[in-house]
Length: 324
Figure 1: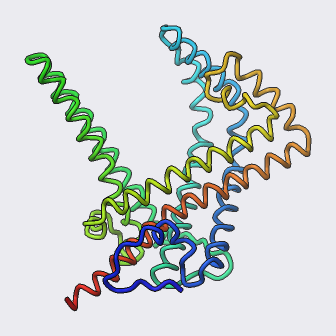
Figure 2: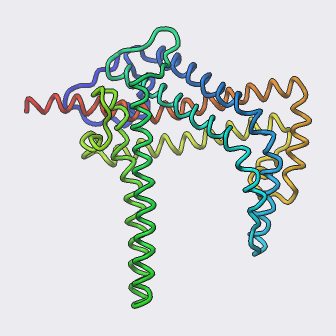
Figure 3: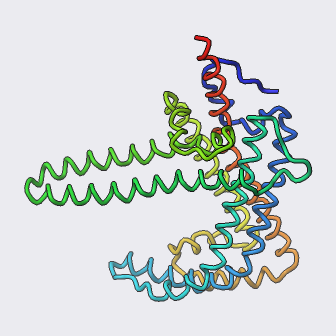
């Protein structure tokens, strides 16, 4: 059992490993991780057949555009614009599914960490609490998007107007403004990161109230999220790379997917599709999707764990402050 001591300092290691520090320790972590991995993998498996049939043409169109840009020519986006609407319904279904699963997974972890509550059987549910968590998640990134859009717009207009009058000053203000905007775009999501956990803790939607939780510990949270995000992205990329190579048998396939290869990626994709008709290769592909789902689940749970720990830490210190 991991009990938050009143008035204790922010524990960096506890924050990034909160998933494995609940009242049931690793047992609950493994259980939640298993079901989160399965849910993510199933969502991907369901949508995979509907998306994959358009991928050869999408990769080919992207490859032609990349070649045009590298040759200094204007890319022709008509082929891409013709394909994307066909893929949009499947992508929307996948996106909504992943968001709903993510809200259910995060809520389960917050309820366990903050109240030692969990569902019997499959720990994932989707109801009013999970919906509020989803709204809190989306609200944070919507606020970030508004700040980014307005920041870029205002900065561009101001720098252009100033540069026309005083070019040197316009350049200086442009650089300083860009740095300030980048700092704001990092500060906003971190300062509001505890919103979902605070929503579960207070049993009502909390967004801007998350600032009181993160107040004074920005650098602690920045370090924790930086470690988890970088580590998570590296792990996800490694798993994805191994999975793609195992399924396609082509070490250059990742380069083909990026559109930077020298050969048309549609050819490489069609060759991989022929391999996928082999039952053994298909089994490897299914296992790879589950492995990716497990990696992604661990990544998202670790991020959610930081939020869980932060609210638990704040709650302990807030209670202690009443007796100061």
